[in-house]
Amino acid sequence: MSTHYPAEVDSEWAPCDRCGTTAGRIIFEGPDRLYHLPGTFRVVECPVCGWIRQNPRPTSETIGYYYPADYVNFVGAIEDEPSRLRQWDRRYGILKRRWAVESFGLSGRILDVGCATGVFLHEMAKAGWSVTGVEPNERAAAYAQHRFGLPVHTETLRRAQLPDESFDVVTFWDVLEHVHTPWQDLVEAERLLVDGGLLVIRVPNLESLGARLFGSLWLGWDLPRHLYLFPRQALNEALSELGLVVEGHRCIASGHSAFTLSLRFYLEDRYSPSAAWPQSVLRLSQTLPIRLVLAPFFWALGRAGLSSVVTFFARKTA
Image (cartoon, rainbow, N blue to C red; front, side, top):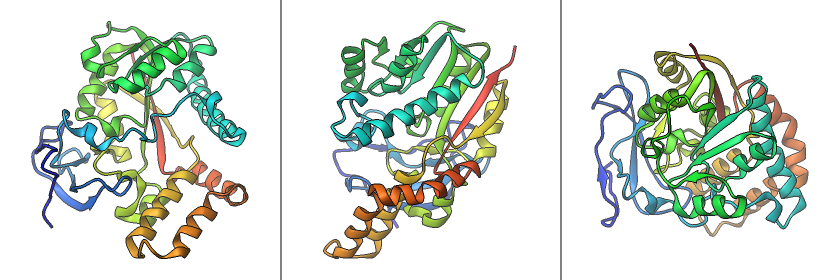
């Protein structure tokens, strides 16, 4: 299968950012299943460090083509949600992030890399943290600055040029898989942490039940927006090389949304768009009664480390 990109979107062949290797074992090729934008994209595994990357890939200048205005992470304030249920759902999700960070006994200065519209940083500021954000998307950064009054650098992490050892916590919530230079960004994050500081990274969980069930149709691949994916052991080794001690992995997010989107991709791949029953199944899967029935199942998946996203917690040693 050949790889095709729309003429207006440049692509590039790139070595592994972790180890510089140009080789890669092809895992699969697939389309943009979330937005159905044009192109077929190739996923390869690095034979040296084990990191998984998209190659070829959209360039840093053209990747924005694949982030439409309604991209899921560009969401507004929780208080602006019209549904009380949706407000509660989002509020609980943000609180779980905050509680996970604070469970390590830290307080003080926090940097959120790829902070999007600033909802997480807003919560941390209300809890007494001194907050800073980095967000290269101008629209999302402007929202965080104006809606919440947050200090957000409209830039990539390394271009922000923040001072050495200036943060007690650095977080990457669903961000590292999107960047062209994840290894270089991890090096930068280590530089920014104080001794004893905490690095928090949430990424798609290649060991999840969803990844095993849905294969190339799993949401975690999210081509072409996910440029890198990280087997757990391979990311552990990278963090250790930076002098960071991995203190644990947790699945702190519900897997329901990832499961229903993966189910959507599965049904779209196998049935005609005109078929009514697959759409009925998808609508049913998102109703409150079904969510309540499935909640114990997804809770058990999280406890077993099998949810679709996993969070790494790593401490910088003196």
